[in-house]
Image 1: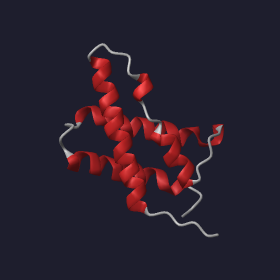
Image 2: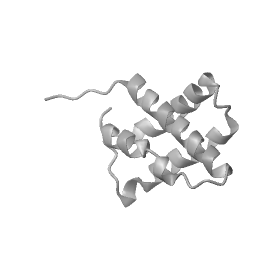
Image 3: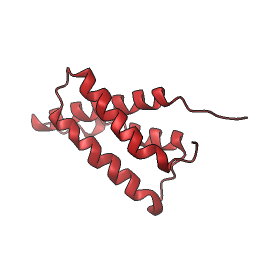
Length: 100
């Protein structure tokens, strides 16, 4: 069975991960301990893209985290900001995946 990936769906998942990260960071700033609310969508995204969880690919994950940290500068109501950052993360990540 051949499996194809819809790039727009992956970008949408990345956007969801960014929104969740923004929420968790906001709760932390309020002095709460919201780690149980983090959805770990990046793990799902990497799995779908065929990027194995190993030392060889750690630099990809670190790049994803680094780019995701830009979310702190984006207003939660800026759908364009989330979309642009999600696109940037996808463009920087997909060359490493095993499906394209």
